[in-house]
Structure formats: C-alpha cells, structure tokens
Length: 532
Ligand code: FAD
Ligand code: NAP
Image 1 (cartoon, rainbow, N blue to C red):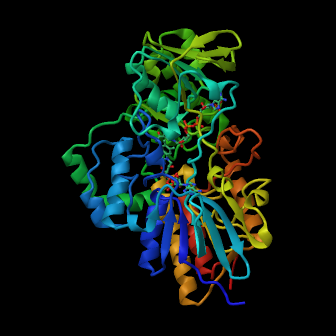
Image 2 (cartoon, rainbow, N blue to C red):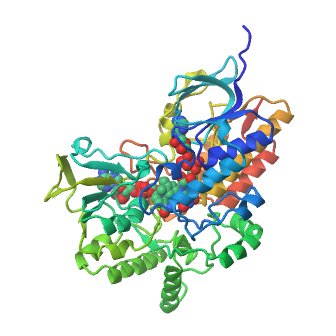
C-alpha cells in the first residue's frame, strides 16, 4: 500500500505563548506547521482569564519573550506587573509582528491524536470534523488551561449568574449593587476579590484553605525605568538564566536559623516592603527546612493579624501549611479588603458548603442569598488539557492509561510509546515553578534543535526510552522531596482534583540544572531517546 503523506510537518495544539513561539521557530527551520486553537483568539491564559485584577506576578520585563532583541526594545510595559489586557495585547503584537496568525485555526479544538504506525504519522481530528496528518505533534495546551468546577450540589441550577475566573466573559461583568459569592482563595480569587468588593453591594468569600499572599507593590513604569531596563536587557536575561526560577532575584545564601531574630525580622520586613515572589528567597532554607519555614510563616501571620481588624477573620485567614507549599499569591489590598463593611469571610473548614438551591447557598450552619457566584476554584493542572484529548500512541495505547499512575515522561518533553509527540512545559519539567516565558522558550528551542537535527541527519522518528523515562521520574521525585511543598496538598500534586493520582508533577531541580540536562542529552546524541 502506498504510504500516506503528511499535511504538515508539525501540528501544534494551542496558540498561547508556547504555540506562538513554536510557529515562529518551526518556520525558521523550514518545517511546515499549523496550529489549532480552541479559543476564538490567541493568547491562551491571557485570552481566557479576564477576571478583574488579572495580571502577571512575574515582572512584565521578565514575563516577555527574549528571542528577539527588537521586540524587547519596541514594546513598552506600563506597569511593573502588567494587567491582563496589556499582556493579551502583547501576544497580539507578537503574532502580528511575526505574521503568525495565518498559521492558526481558531475556535478549533483538537479532539483526538492517534498515532498511525503504518505511515509513521499522527492522525489528528478536530471539533470542526477536520482530519489532518502530521509527522510531529506538539501539545502546547497549557498547564493551567482547564478550569475546575467543584461538584457542589445544585451549582448548575443556581438561579443567579455563575462566572469562572478562567473563562471570564469578554464583555466584562457588572457587579454593581450585587450580592456576590467568591468561592476559593487561590491567586485568581486573591487578585479579583479587592476589585469586586469595590463595586458590589456585598462580597462573601468562601475559603477552604487560607493562603499566603504577599503585596505586589505594583507601580507604573516610568519612561526612565523602562529605558534603564531596556539598556541592560541582555544582562538581565543572562542573570535570569542562572536562577532556580528563571526570575531575577537576589536569593540570600544565609539560613533563617543562623541569623539573630532581629536580622531575620528585618530581612522579612524588607522583602515584604519590596513585595512579590522574591519573598520566598529571603533565606536559603525557607523552602526546605520546616523550622526556617516556620519563622517566615509566623512573620506572615503577624502581618495578617496586623492588617485585618476582626480577630476571628484574621485567624481564619492565617494559613496552616508551610509557606510556599501551595503557590504563594501576590496581591494588591487582599487582606485590607476584609476590613470593608461589605466583605465577609466564611471559613469552610468550620461550615462546609452543603448545596445551592435557587439563589440560596447553604453551608452546614447558614444560608446566603446571592445574585452571582464567582468560581475561583482553580484548574485541572498540568495534565488536564492533555487528558481531555483522545491521545493514543503505538498499539493504540491511550495516554490516559499510560498516565494512570502519574504522568510518566522523559524530561517533560516526550512519553515512551508516543513517538514524535512533544509537550511544552508539561509535567516533568520546571514549568510552573519558573518564569513561564523563559521555560517556554527553553522547551521550544530544544524541540526546534531536535527537529533540525533530525532533518539534517535524515531521521524520521524520535521516542523516549522506557528506562530513561523511569530514571527521569525518579529524578523528578528526588528533586521534589528536598522541598517542603512536596508534602503539601496542592494542584502541583493533583490533590485538588478528586480521583487524580497524587504525584508531584513539576520538576524542582531548577531551570539552570534542567536546561543543562536537556542540553547534555542533546549533545550526547539525544541520550535516552531512540532516533530512527
Ligand atoms: P496557555 O496560555 O494555557 O495556552 C494553551 C492554549 O491551548 C489555550 O489557549 C487553550 O485554549 C489551547 N488548548 C488547550 N487544549 C486544546 C485543544 N485540545 N485543542 C485546541 N486548543 C487547545 N506564569 C508566569 O510565569 N507568570 C505569571 O505571572 C503567570 N500568571 C498567570 C495568571 C493566570 C491567571 C494563570 C491561569 C496562569 C498564569 N501563569 C503565569 C501561567 C501561564 O499559564 C503561563 O505563563 C503561560 O501563559 C502559558 O502559556 P502556554 O501557551 O503554554 O499555555
Ligand atoms: P488555585 O490556586 O488552585 O485556587 C483554587 C481555590 O479554590 C483554592 O482556594 C481552593 O481551596 C478552592 N477550592 C477548590 N475547590 C473548592 C471547593 N469544592 N470548595 C471550596 N473551595 C474550593 O487556583 P487559581 O487561584 O486559579 O490559581 C491557579 C494557579 O494559576 C496559581 O497557583 C498560579 O500559578 C496561576 N495564577 C497566577 C496568577 C498571578 O498572580 N499572576 C493569578 C491567577 C492564577 P483548597 O486550597 O482548599 O483546594
């Protein structure tokens, strides 16, 4: 039988920052490519998450592409942490500048990707009933792109309006004079609650687990600051490459336990005043030693108690897990908002939600009337978007089954049994522990180099070896075990989704070690991969 021909060399799923950069790089190495995007527009996270207050928590100068020096110089960020509309505008600008849109089909969900062993091609089907054949498929489907809806009895029949932060209406929501429930106190809730509280008549926050949130200290970027940063952009990017998270920080080499209490508190105070995620780098052992972590956690709780006037609310807002166990949040006026007369907190640890009937939400001890409910209840992280597609590899074996005991993979890039299928910033890679733009560029560049190597050497197939995958899985768990967060239930472990296998998913070895490992694997003729 005559062999079938591919429609494209590389089929890309998703048109967030990962998909956009992939299109650009594939074109550069002369491979034909096409992307399918479920949304009606590009930008991924920044297309979907339009809730009030949505903005990045990594400084915009860093949370931006580094691959093109002119792009770096021409784009102006208006604030330290740009708001969602500006980040989306930036994604649009990138697409425009590199003429990427013509390679994307929007409003088209990839529903299945089946490996056709006879033809050594991937067969892809979409929600528009189109079928495609590609030599390679890259899933750039995002780590936080499938919102989680909690199974609250009666939620679907709620008489008012229900909004999900990760699927926010484009036209915006007018909460003026409304009674609003916000369920959840993760980053999305913590960003949106202060703004919703400014317009709504009443806001009731339903909190299951109190979180740590540090002030962002967001500020307008002056032209002088912008010019200064742009003048030193190259050095800034190089510095970011040397840090664990790919974010320019000044991690302290000192232990929190070795310094006198006065110095320790002054250090925390300085980090708190500076604001943002670098708080976590105040001391070298905050993230790895329980006693050191306790000192930072206590500092945090005292801050909460000093801001929130009502003692019971303040205590309920004090977290009970290690700082950094779940992703630390970055806010503007989150704790202060609980001093408003129109804001109250319901501690779901004391009175869980029982059901919703009509416009009434019942906890085990009270009933509340609402006009709107905001679900800030998170995502089926890291594996959600991949498991939502019917992906089948060699011998028709489903990815979901291959991952029934956890998302086994090699370097977070490929899975044994699924040749020529790559994932970008998926499980097994540093991904969500980093400045994601940097992680995306590293992954896409590595994939690009790999495909170029295959073209030059006339190779058609690449597949992760099972032993390499096994070893990498152990390395991911070893790296995680050094950190306190490996013992905390979170979306990193899949604990937020009922029935999901609890395994620590991202790689905690740090971006520099990971980058070097990937480069070394490539240098050693793609050690651990079989190339044919
Ligand atoms: P995404 O942006 O998630 O894009 C994936 C795309 O794939 C989506 O558009 C989706 O519709 C599409 N897709 C999925 N499945 C399919 C399918 N089957 N068929 C077709 N299309 C599909 N990271 C940081 O580093 N710093 C931050 O400050 C930061 N802030 C964040 C704020 C929010 C509210 C959220 C949710 C995440 C944030 N992140 C942040 C993480 C963020 O997801 C990444 O920074 C980055 O935007 C991911 O880009 P991506 O292209 O890999 O994935
Ligand atoms: P999240 O951190 O997972 O928070 C979800 C919240 O919903 C948690 O408080 C959770 O409580 C609660 N929840 C879930 N199910 C519930 C239920 N059945 N009943 C009551 N409460 C329930 O999700 P997120 O806030 O969307 O953030 C996800 C990630 O996206 C972040 O960690 C971050 O990486 C990224 N993000 C970043 C920013 C930013 O600042 N740039 C903003 C938003 C998101 P439990 O903790 O008890 O499960």
